[in-house]
Image 1: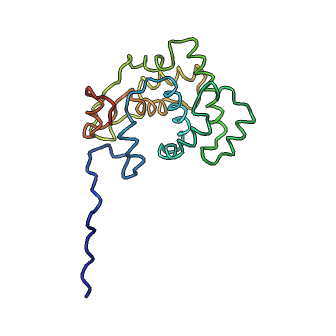
Image 2: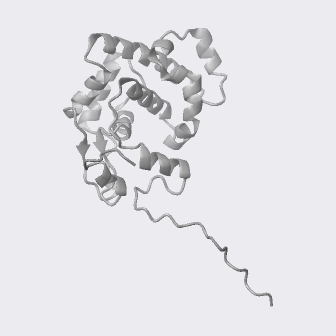
Image 3: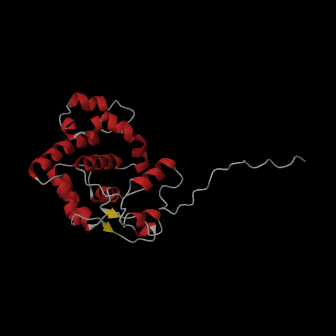
Length: 209
């Protein structure tokens, strides 16, 4: 009988970092969770990108969009609203042939409408960021959920934000999509209390990985 194989000399360390369960063991998802999700974002253009990508997520999983994010950035000119707002039918048709993104005509057309709406808000309001953060009084809301099933999928704030965005010309921004956007943008801290990021996003080093 042959002896059992020797264990590897340098086994990979086991990651025992306490975190929310949804990234599971996917390295890309874990990195997104640990470095981006829930970090307060105030940049007007960055918020535009996040909202558009959340619109593309409708009916899909976020990891699908995350894996295509760099392709989206390439295809959509770095999510520059001034460029996207000028997309014509020919450009939209070319995007529908791009296998690196989600090829959905209504969602692509919604991104163009969103860019035009963003420009209108930037011209007439204090800014896109100021408009959205105004629903939270300008500061992140820190929740203290202990279980994933306790985290809501929509709130009064996300419903109000959704209605405002749709009235301004945005599409694919229902209350559930908007709440996911609020979570990702750090408008609400929905990391579970057992997650190492919950406390990190509450302290003086807020947002640092």
